[in-house]
Image 1 (cartoon, one colour):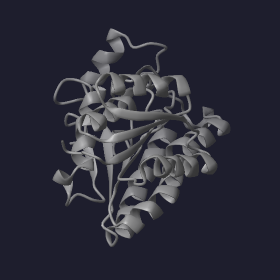
Image 2 (spheres, helix red, strand yellow):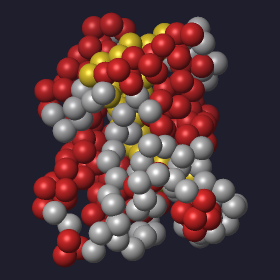
Image 3 (cartoon, helix red, strand yellow):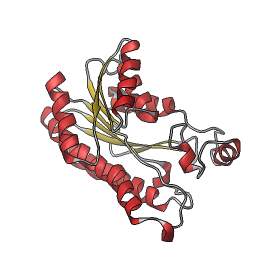
Length: 253
């Protein structure tokens, strides 16, 4: 098992990429804390992990809150006395909107969840990892942070910010033996997909338009990101830090 006896925290672990990654971490032997604003969803991920024979706990947490981020790290340390992996995955999307029509409150929300949430996770997890002189801090970025689509300028800016944050944090953490890596998915079959398509629900027209932009001819499944996250969190990726791994079927070429 690639992650045997390691401890992982996954934010936004109640659905989509977070849930798939939590399941994959557990399948590789990690004990996983599932953090989500929706506690019921977090518990469903825990149930799926336990049903498969893994070990996990659920914790309701708002990633925009310093207290919640501090609490999740403290809880993991209380339960398991170590912290090896943090996957700062929680995020919110943006409807296709011209900049003049973007509400200031929406801008604040996107930046709070997508950027501040990653910063706060690092603020409280990194001291534990530095002290232990080991650990991997993963971030869900996006191809939008590399090649934005029209009408998603705030979302793109938030993901561009975490890409740069990843690189800066990797430089800081390297002397402690801690790695920091971002994954940049193309559109993925998660609850946010319809919003990215600017539709109330995913339809054939929207899928066709998105798939046409991906050279490999399909969108991501959450498991595509989960497999990448397992690799990056494992010792197989021991020399990868500060990188942005594009899981995008060639979209960013």
